Amino acid sequence: MGSLHQEWHVIASSEDLPFRHVYQTRLLGQELAVWRDDNGVVNVWENRCPHRGVRLSLGVNIGNQLKCQYHGWKYESGSGHCAFVPAHRTAKPSAACVRTFPCAEVDGLVFAQLEAPVGNAKPGRQRPLGAALSTNLRSHPVAMNAKAVVEAIQQAAPSFAPLLGDQADRVQTLVSGLSIDLSCAGLLDSVRIFVQPESDSKAVVHARLYAAAALPLQRKIVFTQLLDELFARVLQSPTPAPTARLIASDAVPLKTPNPPAADKPGEPFSCTVIARQNETPDIASFWLKPDDGRLLALEPGMHVSLTTPSGHLRQYSIVNTPDEQDVLVIGVKHEPQSRGGSRSMHVDVQVGTQVQLTLPRNQFQLQPPGRHALLIAGGIGVTPILAMGLHLQRAKRPYSFHYLARSEEHVAFTQRLAALGKQAATYLGLDIEGTQQTLRELLQDREPARHDVYVCGPQPMIDLVVELAREAGFASEQIHFEYFALAPSSKPPAAESGSYQVTIKSSGKAFTVSPGQTLLQACLDHGVAIDYSCEQGVCGACMTKVVSGELQHGDVYLSAKEKDSGTLIMPCVSGCRSETLILDI
Image 1 (cartoon, rainbow, N blue to C red):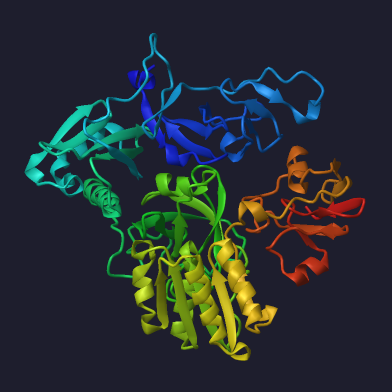
Image 2 (tube, rainbow, N blue to C red):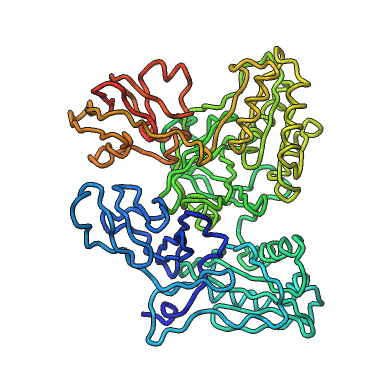
């Protein structure tokens, strides 16, 4: 066992462990599930349920236990011992135990080690003298070996002078293993950097800034910019992210000289990442080139279903211009509450990475010409709305584009926005009242009979736009929206009607769905393979055909007409009112 396994490593910040969240990361190739119980105790476990091997990061933090999402087994905080097995409620719990690792939370950072040596000491070094205040800086994933990252930072130490508020020739360094202190003689401000070795070729840079006085936001932004510039130089990517063009240059030769016909929705195919760019501190864009050179039949509002390197199936809206038919452009936000999908995209996906994806049907389509399009976007919801604006601009159809963002640094796809010219308006840093007033004015100033409303963004914003649009006189069929995810407080519940019998048409297999159990879970438990992703009835990944049964819908994906037809169901949140249900699988 290498000595690095016996050393303490920073694997997360305290902010990465909000209330009842499960955080996923890796250390020296070992995948970890990290969570805090309701007593504040941090657990670092192997990210694997001992029962069937499902990732525990997909499970539920229920306070002092972690519940596996697959069969509902529960494991105790601290020991990792199995405390409850739903299938044997009255029997003694299984002897199964999650593999746990030593961990400690010190000065806002979470440390862990894979092997505890004899006489194991607590991690961390003494806090710098005179540092009255301290704050964590944004963690930064890098596609490099951890030791190489430390060497790169040490060699570039003078460039961190703006962060410390001094001149480059006064920056001092102190290296200890995979950590490095940067300071300036005579100044109290300093930064302590920890490099997490995720694997032999990937690392994450964590840092904590110490200061004698309150820290302005700009100091934190400077750190992110410095790391971006440093590793862009070090990695010397053969395909740099685009700066002057809307579409990335192609560094991957086509495998066929004549591209095949445009693809069909739902058909899986392989793509290679030919470029990647950081759009905002938490949004990255990716250019995905089909490996077979196919041309893509794309429409604004369409999204792709992509399998991340971590194995998660996720949906991402395209932000293509009308000219981009041989490449897919998507934006991915690194969500703090991520179950692993967005983190894998930000950490694991680099130029040259291959991914599998499909193009599902378009549930967020532009309506035929005839009415003016009022486009409203918030946050990462800008991706489908911006694609619509670019399409309407090319088609010379009337539209207006309105983008709400937290601040100027959180405005994504600035080059594409610039292509919209005066038609695009941005609204920065609005509070709740300001957001309500802005949206109310946008909708009340339009004549409903001559406009269609399109909105995408956080669920509360979408709900507000829908409510205000209806108050302004817009009919339901004129209000178009797409959810990325539902707020935890308003997730559509899985059908909790009485039990019912399910039959699979192709095999004749039959089984019972118990009260409170989702149809999806019952299918998976009985070996019926169904793709799924969000488990909220939002993404459409688990959509299944129905032969017969009285359906109880709980999703927001299917249209009212599709629900009335009784031929489609989202098994993650929907069920059956009748005694029998036959699925066309």
